[in-house]
Length: 119
Image (cartoon, rainbow, N blue to C red):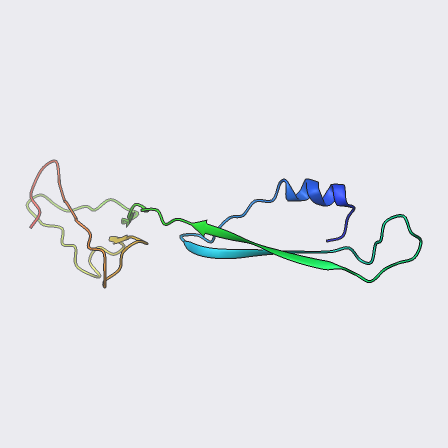
């Protein structure tokens, strides 16, 4: 954008970098300024001068908690009849951890119910 020096400095003082969701690593921010040929108070325009600087941005990884996906409706059964967590029977039960996948980063699952048993 184009503006006078004071306005540009005001904008730069409020610049905020936000990394992509769950992104981490080292990134480079490059800033270029061009004086558009300004040579001060002289009425003769000069050749445009430009300068570029880079800033290294380091975004550290954090341990994000796993996310549950659970059925939207209560799971209902009659007395003495089991509820089976079988694909197609009760859909929508899963867990996702952005920090893990099937090749690294095991998860630990603990199941507890107030009455009855899990098998």
